[in-house]
Image (cartoon, rainbow, N blue to C red):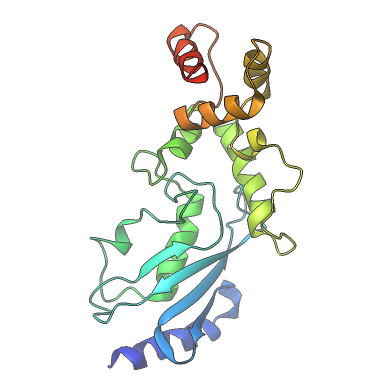
Length: 215
């Protein structure tokens, strides 16, 4: 089967299964190598209620080489870059097989949202948040879903505090504000250091934060 025929067959298979709530379409009818796929966030996760858009580039060697996939929708997840949308998933790399389809790859991404692998992260800061404070992580991931992946969202954070957007504890920010530091600078330093909250007995991290704030 030619590459073009296989891709067309895969698109038709998606259309024939509306219950999966997955879409797969060409960006341009003149280019069979560039598609967009969508799927819904898994129920019972912080991604529930979201519709996630994935950019798909199909190589000339497909299906013997994996497609390049990355999220267009911003996602707060250990295995997805919060900046670029790049994905860390084995089937898109060394575990790819010609029997895998674009639809099954999208289903695997959906499953990845449900079952993160924080010990093999794409985004180390988000992975640390997941491992240190699952409740706080879930709140942040759900906020990103509402902001960036809901049908009514416009991708703008509006009046949302940047500290909420990155799951940073408000009390921690207020503590450093009371020492005379500017809020924007505090948030920037805490994000760069990957600190969301602070144990009162963790003097080493506190001192490191202050050192960065004083620069």
